[in-house]
Structures are given as structure tokens and as C-alpha cells.
Length: 300
Image 1 (tube, rainbow, N blue to C red):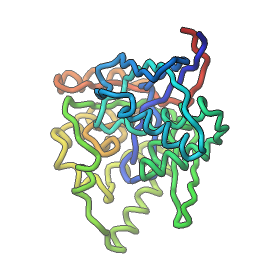
Image 2 (cartoon, rainbow, N blue to C red; image 1 turned 30 degrees about the vertical axis):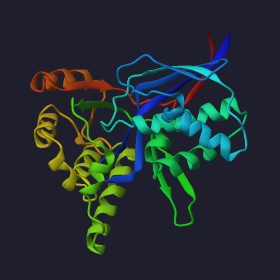
Image 3 (cartoon, rainbow, N blue to C red; image 1 turned 90 degrees about the vertical axis):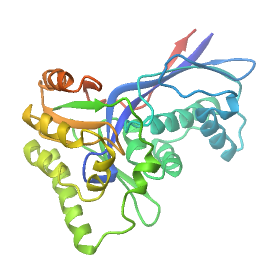
Image 4 (cartoon, helix red, strand yellow; image 1 turned 60 degrees about the horizontal axis):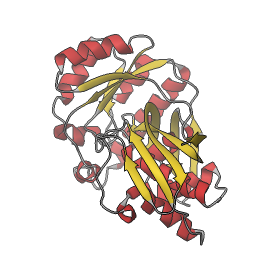
């Protein structure tokens, strides 16, 4: 039986001051193999996936059905084999990958012919902001904005000559809990300074001035000062990474994972060194995924 396979990268959002607007795709993946079937079945092949009892409760199915219903289509029954390398509630975009998986599942099964912009708009509607979903869709480092007119625009940065190191703890931190500690508003002075810092990060990344980018990443005013208290070893990881030569270290998404940008070719050495200091963490050198969502034929 011939079906199709979806591959969706993990992602990290914010990258310091790019709050709710900057996302970067990483080479850990959620994968789905989809085959025709006489009834709906979901098969989980990873301990990182959440449990479920009925297919109607499955998050990916719910997203697919919601999109199919919007287009007045019926989802044909399928058997879906799912594997994942993306831990839940760690700040590595597990929700965004699942959302885009559900969107693409409906797109393929119902022949919706959605454009990338259509997928981005629906994903943003579900997630509330476009940073992670844009990275999952397009790959690379993507800057996004949802304008007051509810239009979503994005810009994909050129390939960055960097390595990435992530520090994944064993504990979870729900995004809603991490949002509760944020202020409801910022003064004009705070907003102007925070915006300027974000502008400098993006401009310096594009120009290749990674020292400036790293320094500015660590001066965020939008969310890091408030979330730092929720993350054990926050200061320790930042200092250890800096001692090892990292340009900058910030919270990945809402946390509790942290992420560093480091000079090209030093990721493995940095990860191995800090792993020895944090044996309870999973410290790993990752690469930027430049492909985003991938769709291929799959033979059972």
C-alpha cells in the first residue's frame, strides 16, 4: 500500500528579544507515515508522544478535522504511524510541529491545495503567534509578524554560519505557566529599548556579526527577566556556555530548555563539555533545519 510521509522539524522561538516573532527550525523531527485504512488508527512509536485513548481525542486528528470541516470536506480514514524526537513542554516547538502535521494531513487527504501562506495563517490561528509554525513550515531562521490588520508577513534569514547547542532538562514547563509571569504591559521606554535590542539581534545575525548578536540576545526585556526564575540553572548554563565560547545563550521558547549560538564547528565540543557539568540534562549540538515541512511518498 502506498501512502505518504510527513517530516516536521522541532523549533525554538524568541531567540532572546524576538518575542513571539522569531523562530528557528532544528534537526529533531516529528514524522508521520499515513496509509489508507478502513478506520482511523494512530500508532505511537516514541515515548515522547502524549498518550491518548480514542482517535477523536488525538491532537493531530483534531487539527486535521477542524481544517477539513472549514472546507466542508470529510477526512478519509487512515492508519497513522507517528514517531517523534521532540520532547513535550520543553520549549522546542512540539505543539507547532503537531499543528502543522494536522494541517498537512488534512491538506493531503482532502486535496485542499493550500498555499504555504494558507498553512501559516491557520497554524497561527491555532497557536496564537506565528514564530514556531513559520519555522516548522519554511525551515531556517524566520522572522514573522501578525499585523493589526491580521495579515501575516515573514522574512527568512540567509543561512547562518553557526552551530546550535541545546540544554534539555528532564522537567516540563507549560507555555501557559510561563506566560503567567509576564507583565500585562510595558512602558514606552521599556518597549522602545526592547524593540531596539531585537532589531540589533536580527541585523547583526544577517550581517554575520555574531558577537554583537549574542550580546544583544542576552539583554532581552520582553520575557527572559520574568521567566528566568522558573528555570533552574538559568545563570549557571549561561555562564558555562560563555566560558566555553558561546556567542549567546537564551531560553528556548517558553523554556525550560535553553539554547546557545556558538561558533561553527564548536557545537559538539561545547555540548560535551557542558554535559559533563550537567549530567541530569540532555546537552546536544544541533543543526539548523533548512527544509521545513517535507512530504514524501511512503510504501508500507
